[in-house]
Image (cartoon, rainbow, N blue to C red; front, side, top):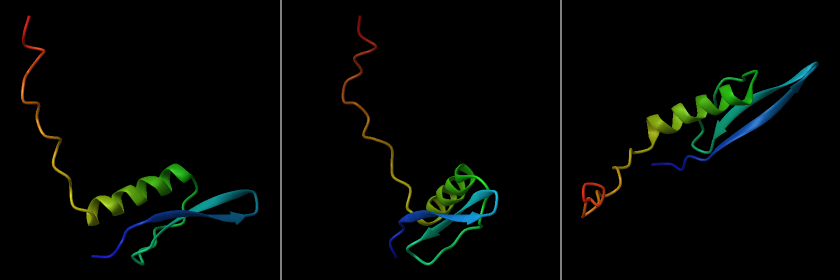
Amino acid sequence: MGHHLIQIRPQPVPGWVLHWPVCTCGWTGYVLRTQQMAQDQADEHLAEHLPTTSPAQPALFDLQGES
């Protein structure tokens, strides 16, 4: 499996700056108007290609239930 490091590259155009998410695996997202939209698209790409991690190990003792 390839590495997935996302870089959001600015794409200057007259009047504003667009944002282009690019991954080291070769994936390129859409050129988008806001950085948040580009980050959302990058997050979706990572969610599709990275294994999900299991939740943290549960506590051995439940201290909240004790009075």
